Amino acid sequence: MTDRVTGEDELVAGLERLGLGAESIVFLHASLRSFGRVDGGAQTVITAVRQVCGTVLMFGAVGERTGVPAPPGLVRPNNSFYQADSWAAFDAAVAAATPAGPGLPTDGWLGAVAAAFADQPDVISGDHPLYPFRAAGDHAEELIKGQRPDRMLGPVEVLDRLDGDVLLLGVGHHANTTIHLAEQRLGRSLFYRYAVVAPGVWAEVPNVSGESHNFDDLEPRLAPVTAETMIGNCRARRIPARAVLASATSVIMNDPAALLCPDPDCRCGGALRQRLAVLAGE
Image 1: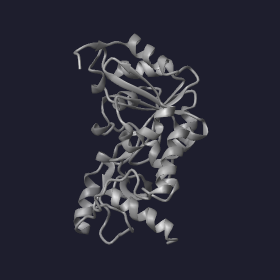
Image 2: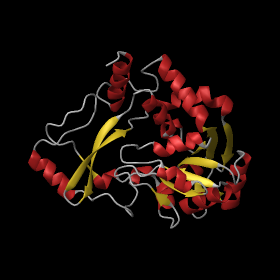
Image 3: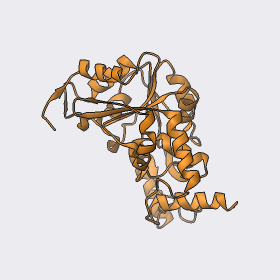
Image 4: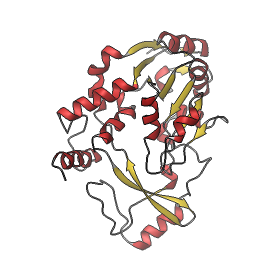
């Protein structure tokens, strides 16, 4: 890679080469580092995407602050999650957690672009206690209304209905959250997690998605419907969300272990067991 600087105009031109415009509804996944250097950093990336696209959706996460282990004795089948060793340990975790609510910082693992987007004053945030989606633009309210505490991927369902696109900027399909919706529609990757929702009050949160270790295996199938360009050092791709869902559905129906890693102790193992239970009629 060359040590070059990417500016806002170059970002805008690259997004337009992908065929994006004012009517576009995009689910953005982005790596700032992938560009090399960006004049203005993550904020410039967000500014360019919002300048080109009418609606922008991003995944959000606050679970590093709000999440707690499962309480002792509460065992869900194929849940692939850890439990507190004792009620004393669980109570301590609840006391140490931050109650879910508006204004919490984005978990660091999501990166600088997601954090910059969440901090914009007109961005609407979902009320999921672990994974609140964020959106801005013409269809933002409609997208975010699709999310509930028991419906983590509701905004992706709305994206599907609106015929939106997945926009990958410097990341692979391992970051493509839309694939998780295809899994869940087939009874796979449906986990219970736990969060503090008010001081001293915890809740069980169903339908949380799992791992994405092998989601890049889907790339060859999606190549014919993928628009691609380079923006600076960043590989930028636009894929119709409906094509992502159709391709993921097809491969999982053909092979219940498709797109999962082979580790039985990983959430991938739990997801596979969930799918096999569905096929067995359990």
